[in-house]
Amino acid sequence: MVDEDRIELLSVGVDVGSSTSHLAFSNLVLERDVKSPTKRFEIKERNIIYEGKIIDTPLLDNNTIDIERLSVFFQEEYRQAGIDSGDIKSGAVIVTGETAKKENAKQIVEVLSEGSGNFVAATAGANFESLLTAMGSGAVERSRRYNKTILSCDIGGGTSNIAISKGGRVLSTSCISIGGRLLGIGPEGRIWRIDKPAVEVMKELGLDYRIGDRIPEEDAEKIAARFAEALLEVMSGPACSSLAKRLMVTDDPDFPHRIDEYMFSGGVAELIYGGNGSYKDMGQMLANKINSLAPKLSAPVIEPENKIRATVIGAGAYSLSISGSSGFMDDNISFPLRNVPVIRVDIDDSQLNHEHIVSQIQRAFKRFDIHEGEEVVALYFKNPARAYYPELELFAKSVEAALANSIQNGIPIILIFEKDIACGVGNVIRRETGLKTNLLSLDELILKEGDWIDIGEPLVNGQVFPVTVKSLIFNRN
Image (cartoon, rainbow, N blue to C red; front, side):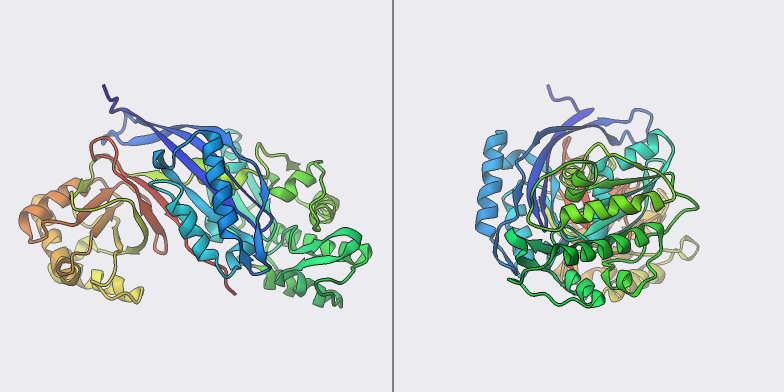
């Protein structure tokens, strides 16, 4: 007998970073909240069941990732874990740092996400990664458990992802191009890799090195020191120097009144907290410089639960959201629905009439420069109507009028609500309008304009939908 009050999902987190690539599998346990009026599901347990091998991200050349070798590696990891890709229902493929700038970055996420399971998000957004690393490192949970404000910084090969967590919630995220693999130094000090941020630092220091040159240790130390200074500058906020501003990938984080603790994760953090190893880059130098500057921070530095694996654990265990338990789905829709842009529609309930609703939907499309009827979007409404039949009927007929081209072209109509009205809206639309197919109506999701979502196969007899909220920003500048 199927337990309709408890669901277990297999989830995967895949990280293709500037320095390393690896994955982790998690088992997620969802249970109904019996105290909730809508009996919605919540994630109650997140158990890491397999942490894979960590490899150097394979490259064909400095601008191209070796997709074939990468794909074979992850296929072997699935075999080692004894997991079939068809059993994966949630998770994310994260392409991070300098890797997101490679010529074939988009192709990588397409190949890996298609082969990784039925519902895997492909993402490369810097702010999204900052959110996941804060969760995967344990910073968010620690902020909840001890009621602290924690600034976590995940330092990888190409970027440092910053998040500020308070009371179990991420308040702000940011990212700067600082990482251990931006300058690759091989035997006898020969440079084998120089990424653009390292060139920026060299210019500032009056240095000029090329791939193949031998760099004295003294100069490499100067470069690492300048990166560390810029990072600590941003962590103390905001970025003031011209170098730090040029290295920023996103805006500065929004700082609260005080930070109680600082925390580092990522590959470089393994070295910050006393690990060792030879990585043919400036990671160890960067770690040493950060340690020398850390006493200047306004609060103590603590060690996280997870360091180099923070991203994959965050991607596999924390990227999932669950819709309310009263969705409405037409059987003609095929899942998963991938990379759907979220468009907010602002309905003023004091002006609830046909013209207002239609014009606001049209205005929302125009804001995104999207022509209605040409592609799938998710229209997001906070509270467009009460659960009162005349208002639901008015809303339903207005949606039909505003989406005439989408309906005619057979494009799935996706309506998402913050409040618990999805089932009522879906039933009234089917009963009172000509929109009889291709309708998906979900609720109890918190989204914002600019989000992208993947919607997975429905669970518990079509009552619940797994949703990954993400971003798809490749840092091409």
